[in-house]
Length: 264
Image (cartoon, rainbow, N blue to C red):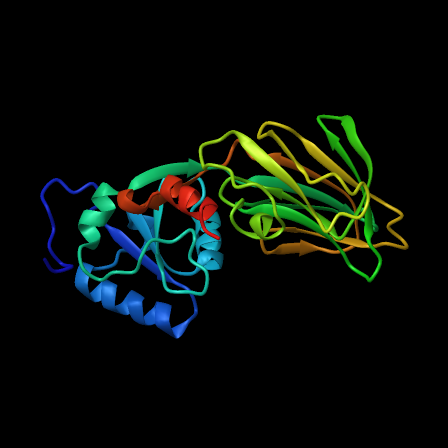
C-alpha cells in the first residue's frame, strides 16, 4: 500500500506538515507534502510535526487550545514524544491513532528586580544553581510548608509527559500519562540526604522560595524558557489550556512507559 492511498470516511481531510530547522526534517516535510498534500495550519484538521521532542514541545505550545491534534514523527535527536517515521500508510496511522489531552504547567517566577515572569511547560519546570554553590530552597504545597530547607543543585516539577525526560535522568519516577500527579524531584540533594522527592496531586499549587539568593543565585526554566536570579517560583497546572497529542496504537504512551521501566 502506498502512502497516498485514502480510505473512505476519513476523519482528517486536511493535514498540515510542519518541520524543525534540520535538513532531515525539512526533506521529510517536502516529501510528505508532495504525497499527501499540505494545508495551511489554520485550515488543517491535524498537524504532523517532523523533528525531535524539542520541536514537538514547541508545536504543542503553538497549537494549544486550537483543538488540532498533533502527530509527531521522529526526525530529530530525541523522540520519546514522537512516532516512528514512515512514508507509507500515514492516513491509516492517523485514523487509528490514540488522542490524549495534556495540560501544561504554568510557572510564575519573580526575580530579584521584582519583575514577574510567566511561562508554560509541557515537560517540566526546573530550578538550578547558577554558581558553584548549592541552592537553598524552601518548598510549600498549597500554602503549607513541606520542606523548610533543601540544599541541592536544583529541583524539578515534572508532568507525566515530562517524567521520562530530565526527571528520569535525575532518578525521578515515571508517571503514566493519565495519572493526576506531578513529580517533585531534587537534583543532587545534599541536605536532607534522605529526601528523594515526592508525588503530589496535579491540582496542587507548588511554591519554591530561594533562600540566600544573593549568595546562592538560582535560575528557573519552563521547558525552554529560562529566567535568571529568581526569588520565588509558583507552579500549577494550567487548567484553562489543552493540547492534543497523538500516538500509534501499537506503540502507545502506556507501552512506552512500561518499556522504559523494564530497560536496564
